[in-house]
Structure formats: structure tokens, C-alpha cells
Amino acid sequence: MQNIFLLEDCEQFINRINKLKPNSQPFWGKMSVDQMLAHCNVTYEMVYDNIHPKPNAFFKFILKSFVKKKVVDETPYPKNIRTAPQFIINGNRDFNLEKKRLISYINKTRELGENEFEGKESLSFGKLSAKEWNNMFAKHLDHHFTQFGV
Image 1 (tube, one colour):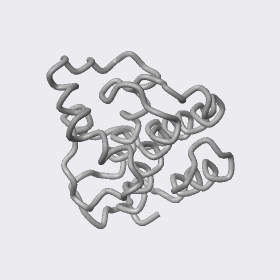
Image 2 (spheres, rainbow, N blue to C red):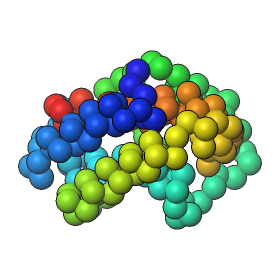
Image 3 (cartoon, rainbow, N blue to C red):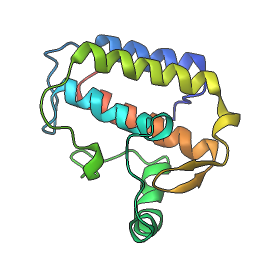
Image 4 (tube, one colour):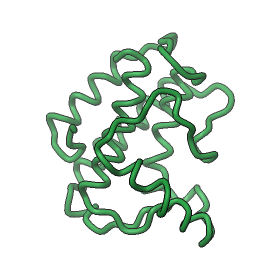
């Protein structure tokens, strides 16, 4: 598993982003490349931007009990896995803007570092270790970059 807190690994992710083109096509799934970038940004928006509602106590319990392990462990996501409603991107997005935002979020996360994320509260899953944060970020990016062949 790559480490989102290491410069070399972040540079690899950014190099993969830079290989994407506005007309890149997925090997599976329904998202366009601009929607995929916006979708990847949602994970970071939930950390840095106060624009997504917190799940209610019952839904958070469900997420922590049945979804968390699959999201924060090192097992890669299968193709065509269902996503949470807040991650569904409808309509076209600005490819260059979403690309720039994602690169910025990746750099910000690396600059803040592991210590910033150790025990940090997740909107959906409660407190996570830095390793769990890394797994969540890194495997999500890898899944979608693989989806688009980069």
C-alpha cells in the first residue's frame, strides 16, 4: 500500500493524475473522468471542508459496524463497488478544476503529515489511526486511477 504521507508516493499519485485527459475513458463503471476526480475530492472535502452533513447516530453506527473495515483495511476495492450517496457525482464537472483540487488535497494531506491524522475524527467512521486514514485515501485513489488506466 502506498503511503499518502510520503513525498515519493504522493508524487506517484500526482503523476498518475497528470496522465489523465478530459477524454480518458474508464475500464469499468459509469463515471466520466471529470466525475471521478470530483468523486475522489469528496473524501478530502469531508476532512477539510465543512460542506457534507454528518450522518445521524444510527447511520454512523451502521457505517462503523459494517462499512468501516472495508474502507480502512488494505484490501483493494472490487470493480463496480457501490458508493455512498454523498460520493455520487451527477452532471459534468470542470476537469482541470477537479484535477487541480485533487492535487492540492493530496499535497495538503502529505504536508500535514501522519501525526495530524493519528486519532483524527472521520465524519463517517469516528476516530481513525493514521494508518487507517492512509489506507482509505491511498486505496481509493489507486482504485479510481486503475479504473481509468493510469
